[in-house]
Length: 118
Length: 112
Image 1 (tube, each protein chain N blue to C red):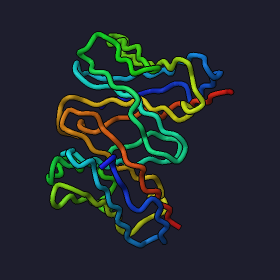
Image 2 (image 1 turned 180 degrees about the vertical axis):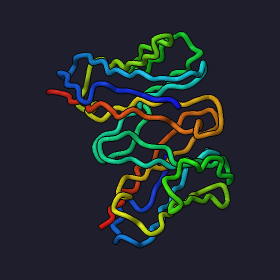
Image 3 (image 1 turned 135 degrees about the horizontal axis):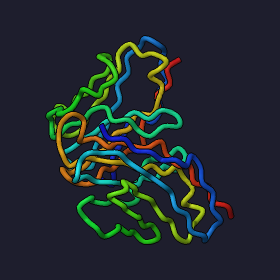
Image 4 (image 1 turned 135 degrees about the vertical axis):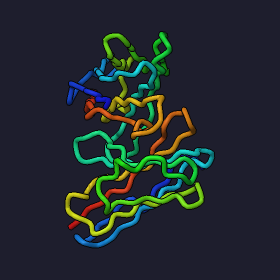
């Protein structure tokens, strides 16, 4: 079974600065998807960014980018020019490209609480 | 249709009662998922449907939990004989096959 580990329970960053959230995962599969989701307090889970494992190029979405290191099984999220609205829980998630045995669902880490200091 | 819709948003029930939650996915999405999220944890995958077929249900937490998607559109998650340990946020999500997963706002269940 796959596991996702987020080793930083909480991170704090000054507004307008850059912060990196860490994620590692364990899998024996060669093809899969990785995601970062944002969950503001009492609000729904929002997809931030997606990475396909077969792609060497790191995904980017505006101020959000990832550093995907397949051999190291590492998938970190960098948030540039942090804004107050970025404050939330951030979850890293894994999904297999295979079907069956629960592989079609997302496996989440425990999350990192990001605090933005004004 | 702007997203995944879940009802009710909050449910308080007495231990031993049955509860049912509804989820309306993004209209063009053929996959629908149910997750449970407890405090301080990431969501935990429970079950999913592709159209009306329930393709995975081994992750349902006990036989008190069941889900349906009778016409391949909306889905319901039922918990029978609720227990205090069932208190959690229940999240519904939907996707296209191979596509990204989008979540609803969840139903927060409190069992007293």
